[in-house]
Structure formats: structure tokens, C-alpha cells
Image (cartoon, rainbow, N blue to C red; front, side, top):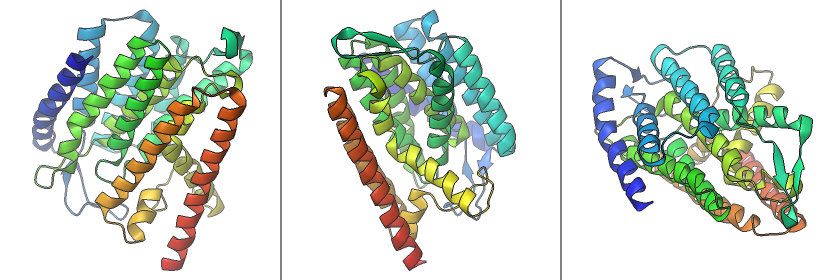
Length: 336
């Protein structure tokens, strides 16, 4: 496993240097705007390095397993769609259509939540709930990671932390191949992050990266978390990804309440509110990292609990996130 991690880390870092040069050559840049935090044009499309690294490491060290075909195809389509958006800046509605096609195709190829495993090893089918649950999970997490891509290192760092946590959970469930995929994703993302944080040679991960990361996390959570009890099968990944998931849900409610289209971006996301409250960009990112790490510990711990205890822990965790969000919103309104 160490060999896989070192390979993914080194390849991603090296590829990122080459990708940045290519992006500049082809003038694929993110320009400053009203909702954007950067002040000058920055190469956008670092997800190319992350994507190539993950696919390359997976093929070399894990080979090709047909049972993961849905994951590979869906993740590839999300990456390509994101790259097209990085280059041509396509409208949100068209991007959503593309995401739906990618999700449906991945599901057609077998990437679905089909059963849950209760205490004692009892397998229970979720029947007709399988398709809608899988659809909204894959689409929702993809967009959740995409929407938090607003500060240097935010989406990549959160995705890396979530990947490591999913890998630990998958390893504890005996899903070593899924764990390896999760750790490859984490290492590839970490290899890119120094370029995202760099002041002189900065590069953004872009939609190509954030959509790829989001879909990959959603897919790996389906493939790797199979033994959590009863209704709480998706409890661990929900807690791992609680910040981007809740931030996305809050954004939808906020925009609908204000009479705005839910696809039109704004500056109401958690990271924006933290910056507006006086956090530096780096401190805002670090703050969200700490919360995500804490949620990762809670998620791993929850997989070892009985169903009722896991449910109580889940409710408490969600309640704390909601309380934190409302507290920040209130302070933001008073400040602004």
C-alpha cells in the first residue's frame, strides 16, 4: 500500500507541473470575477493531473475489475464534462444534464446501492429504493464537492480527508481494493495541492477535478461501506461529507427563499461567510479541514456502534453542523 501511495503522490505532483504549462499554453485560465477570490488569471484544470494519476495507479497496481466499471465510466464522464466546462464555461443546466447522463450510465453498469447488512450479517434488500437513492447520492455528492471549490485547497483538501476516511472504513470492512482506490484518490489529490496553494505558480483544480473527486467519493462510499447496520448504511459517508452536503442543501434553500435560480452561484457558501467574517482564506480552509477531520473520526467510530447508537450520534452530529451554520449566518448578517 505504501508503494501505491508514494507512486500516486509523486506522479500527481510531477504531472501537475506539466499540466499547468499546458493550460497556460492553451490559454485555459480562470479570470477574476465578482464571486471569485483571486485577483489575476490562474490556470484552471489541475484535475487533469489528478484524474490521470488515479487511472494510471489503479491500472498498474489493481488491474481492471469489471465490477468497478460503473465507477470508472461515471468518473471519467464527470471529468470530461468538467474539463469541457473549464475550457468553454458551459451553462449550469447543460452541465446538470451531462451529470445526469454520467450517473445513469454508471448505475446501468452496476454502481448501485442494492442492500444493507444488519447485525449478525443479515442482508436486506432495499428494493425499489435502490435506484432513486443511488441517483441522488451520486449526483448530490458530485455537486456538493463542486460547489465548495471556492478557496485554494478547499475542495481538494476536503476530498483528500474524506478519501482517507473512506479508505479506513473500507479497510475495516475487508474491502481492500476499494480502500486502495480511496487511498490512491487521496494521494493523487494531495500531490496536486501544493500547486493549488502556491503563490507564484498557482493552479486551480477546476470543474474537471472537483466533479471527478465528488463522483469518486460518492461511488467509493457505495463500494466500500457495506456492513453498517440497517437504515444507517450511508451514515458513515454522510458524516464524512457532512460539510459539503449541508452547504449544498443550505445553498438550495437559500436561493429558493430569495427567489433565485438554484443553479446560479452566489457568495453565501460557508467558506464565503467565514472570509466575510474576517477569516483569511487560509484560515477559513484550515477551519473547514479541522471540522472534516473531526467528522471523519466520528464516522469511523459510528461504524462500530449498534444501529440505535449510530443513529443518535448521527442526529447529534447533524444538529451541531446546523447550529454552527446558523450561528455563522447570524454573525454574517450582523457584520454585513
